[in-house]
Amino acid sequence: MLLRGPSNEWWFDRWVADLGRRGVAFHWETPLHQLHVDGGRISGATVGAGTPVEADVYVLATTPFAAAEVVARTPELERDEQLAKFRPLVQDGPHTQVSFRIAFDERMAWPRERTAIALTDSAFNITLFANEQAWPASVDLGRGVRSLWTGTACVSTVPGPVHGKPLRTCTEDEFLDEVLAQIYASDALDLMILEANGGRGLRDFPVLRTEVWPEWHFSPDGIAPDQPKWVTTTNTRAHRPAQATSVPNLVLAGAHTETEADIWSIEGAVESGRRAARVVEPDVVVQPQHKPLLLRATARLDDALYARGLPHALHVLGAATVAGLALGFSRMRSGRAT
Image 1 (tube, rainbow, N blue to C red):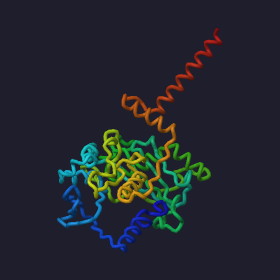
Image 2 (image 1 turned 90 degrees about the vertical axis):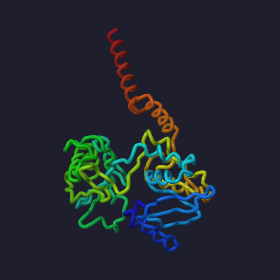
Image 3 (image 1 turned 45 degrees about the vertical axis):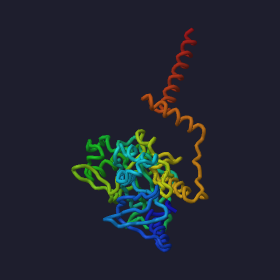
Image 4 (image 1 turned 90 degrees about the horizontal axis):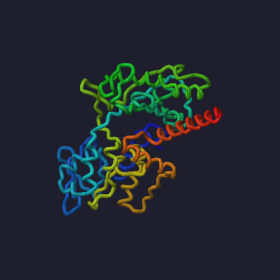
């Protein structure tokens, strides 16, 4: 359902409306201030400017930064092994990961349906997804829009090739300049577009307009989002809490909790929600992630290599292959000379 159209229109708005019909009350744009503990259980919560909220079960699914603040206000909660993990979990601080979209006035074929592309050679590590490849034709992409790409710039510390500034210090116009320049500079992306569109490359499809997702705010002091973003890092991965806590009626959820998806992602968030629901309703099924033996082995090898400051497994394997080939050619030449 989520991939059939804009997430609010096709999922969240409908979900909220259904819950409202079932009697669920919502406190919109109201921060959770504190959880109250009584007898080892959560007895209530305070939101906004002192509004009390009571429930049978409490699911703490805020950003990890907000959760860390809530837990810090209640010393009793910090005694729980899982809740105590929030302090080291947020040690790296918020991550600058800016979302944008690009509209084209002509339909452009995508290399493969429902495929996301990561431009690993771009300074900002840009990821792209063509929405119309997953959405039905009835979804309105916008006035005059025939193809709509959404993307994310994931690295904020590397200078861009156009303005020589890292993402976190760019103005909005500079950011968009960099995004387009880095996309157009990707020969691999252009080749995929050429193959999918009968010889027409990326520059053959004029851009109708580009825009940054409105939750990002640019200023001389840097870029700030409406909600601080957290990502999995080598410093924080080990501190992800489980969904179940020692407090019987307090459950954790969010892609920052421990899941088999293993990284901060939509997939991790969905899995965490099912795991949180299973704490309350044991009959809830959580599908295990399929991890082939080869991937599990290379993951363990990567961890060992990283701990020693060495490149990841693919680089080591590539270097070993090149060295082996060089040694083989050397022996062949030596044999011929003999």
